[in-house]
Length: 80
Length: 208
Image (tube, rainbow over all chains, first blue to last red; front, side, top):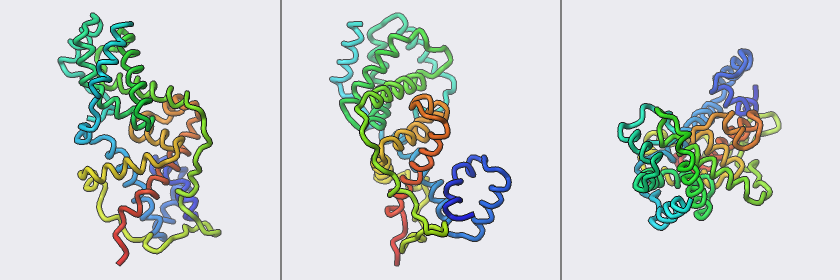
């Protein structure tokens, strides 16, 4: 397995969806290729960062509904 | 709390709030807009990247939710139900936009040599300095990641947001975007790789 193939198969590997033979080749490649170990680790960190960066309640202060929009929504509902 | 978190039992006062919405009480509508609107507007902003479109989507979603409150199932979480409605409203806006040629993503994907090994530049093998859990405690780091997500080409960004951030399944994302599940998986993998590329220079130890 090459680095290109390993990166192509990375998401299936994480999901446990690789066939046994490919799974074994994937892990054999990792044992010999520190840059791919690093890529796998930083890919996993990227997924965590994406999920965490948009979910933190401390950032919600930026997400208040402007009062004029509150009123516009309530007025539109009253007309329904 | 993240709105896409699977629901547990609704809080005790939510049942009363839903009952008041069903009775058409004006104060209940105002409570919902103020209690949930901020989080829902953030979802619409993330998907649409346009303030006017995001506000329109929020209004469309809440009006639709108020009209359809009888379809809300007892025992579900109002926040989860509203989240799904605003995602759908934002996706309708995205689909209605004039289609533009997609920005290429290839420049953000890993580069390989002819023999299939990865082409590495100087400093590519230095480690990321801190784990995600530590980085996420800092507001500026969270802002950096959100800004990198915003830089992804739209078709990839939308898939990443729906799958990794808003918590839709591959099948739900495929239905929402009128794509095959396999196309969703390919796009998600490329979007994650591109996001990694954008974050990488910010997170590595500077070469000594």
